[in-house]
Length: 250
Image (cartoon, rainbow, N blue to C red; front, side, top):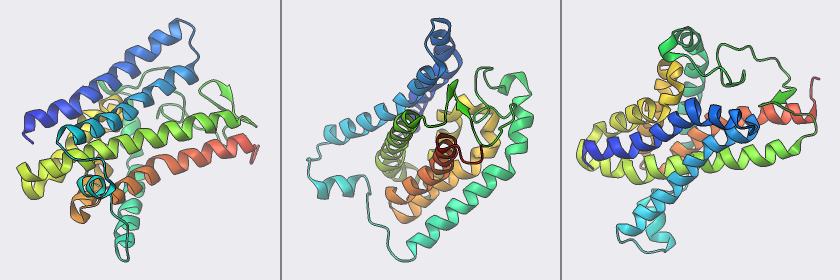
């Protein structure tokens, strides 16, 4: 996969997400669409990525059988010592994300890297998070199971879509072009182009953005990077929402 094609495949989705966060959501809010719905739409590009990866798979001439499918997307079982690598990378990513948050808060004070004002505390480093959460995106959390029913599937399918396209479909092709450094190209494009919408977190996210494709390339296993991605980005978030729905600590 030539570099220019990688730029397109990472840059176009990143551009749509950036536009959605900085212009699309404010436009919807101006037209009376609730923040919880407007913000949820930002997860849709991830679902589109899943569709794109499946379409690309078929256009490459692969058949719809499980053996070919799991081989092409590197969907292999996790065995033995592989779990140690996954847990280790997960811990490194989590610790680095947390320890580098102070840099993100500083960058967020610079206009060029500042987040949009409407972002709530969980996503905006300039706003304090008060636990337990009592509301999320303008709606009350206590006993509101609909929030979990909406956000868990959206988060899950969005991240699965990313892993299928970035690591399952694109990374093996990048390896044919960039060899042992394919993970660097994959990770930098994932960080800089796809996550431009979170530009205040550029430095803080870099370790996890690089280590996730490194793990996928080392193990030749998209399942491994998906576990790190989902575990690091969603599980804590889901637990925070669940505690708010249950009213734990409130």
